[in-house]
Amino acid sequence: MATPVSADLRRRGALIRRLLRYREMLPGSLVFTRTRCGKARCRCAQGGPLHPVCQLVARVDGRTRTIYIPEDLIPWVQERFRQHQAFLADAALIGRINLELLAAKKARRRDPAATCKGR
Ligand SMILES: [Zn+2]
Image (cartoon, rainbow, N blue to C red; front, side, top):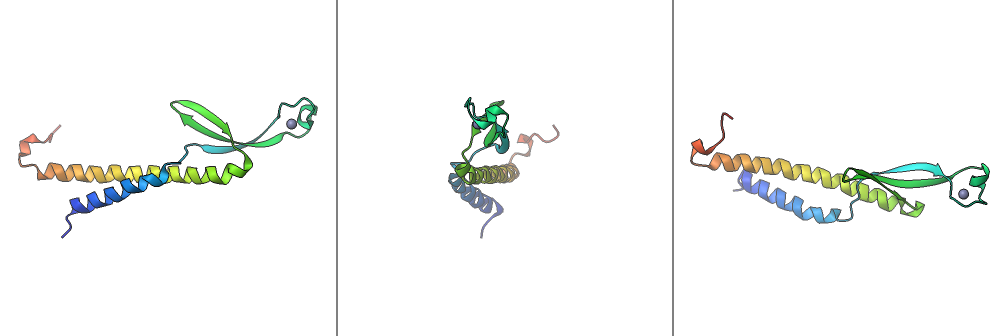
């Protein structure tokens, strides 16, 4: 018969193995904007319409990182954003399971005085 602890351990193992799926995940979001291309003779330098561009914007180590994303890579990047969200959800689940395992570990202890109860 499966105890709650062994069920939690199995569920955590499955989640840990699933993390491999997220190895290409990307943080951040896409920002669509318009800009000048920098060519002196271009229409955008003559007051014409600006060029649409897509940027990945991510916060890394407290700084904002911006990377231009070519149009054909947008779906690829968006899939990596979805992987990142799934990773965060799975990481939160693993944390919840670990809290349950800690509570069960504490409950199994023989010496009730060894707990931090009352603090
Ligand atoms: Zn231009």
